[in-house]
Image 1 (cartoon, helix red, strand yellow):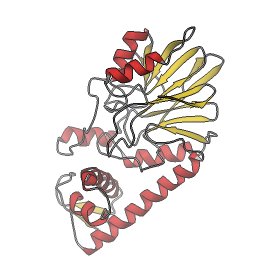
Image 2 (cartoon, one colour; image 1 turned 120 degrees about the vertical axis):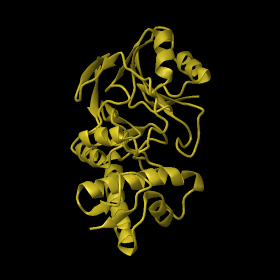
Image 3 (cartoon, one colour; image 1 turned 90 degrees about the vertical axis):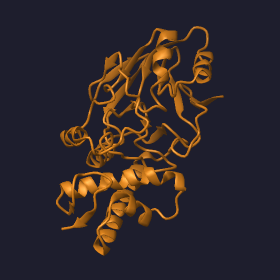
Image 4 (spheres, helix red, strand yellow; image 1 turned 180 degrees about the vertical axis):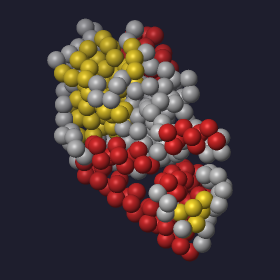
Length: 291
């Protein structure tokens, strides 16, 4: 089903609901004559057909924009590009945008991660931070927002911000090192708060009418989670999974692994800031304690 969000914005939801994708991945069609497809979604021929069927006579897909290369956002880009002859635009491949710290952790080989990553993703055109793309009579701007994923980029179009998985109304963004980086996430949130867009269109879930308020909530949520971890470690040293089980007492059991990755992101950040120490390598098995 094609849903009209605004006169020049339509949404098609992929049929991939799950605890991690909520009701499914949102694919957005932006423009009147020239159409930009934002987040084509999973490799699903039915979803591809739905996108192509929504392209009316006299219009054409001219751009395929990918917020980040998780398997629920980017894989269909290749087939859509082949069908439409449109180029694929993104910040970079699945390893682009990692901080020096995350690159070093990845090289250790103990940190885990890599959940749901579209390893083979490569855009036709790499977008620099702050790029402005002409699109009909409008501009689409790309803002690099690492945190949930190193190559994560949000796209601005008028008052709307296509925010991928960086900001969602139904859940906080998962941060799983080394693909995710908590310090980078906070910086990206701070940066969004300096911008003028108010209406956020996320990769999953519904339109967020007051995006900046949601960003402030996300920052407060991370601060609260950090305090909980410090409080738990004050009671006794623990590893990431143990802390997740002690803190996330009311979530779907299927999400405890994701919660563990989020806790690990906090532990790495706290260790970097010399608030806690690791009793071994930085991974989810190691026990951590307060300094």
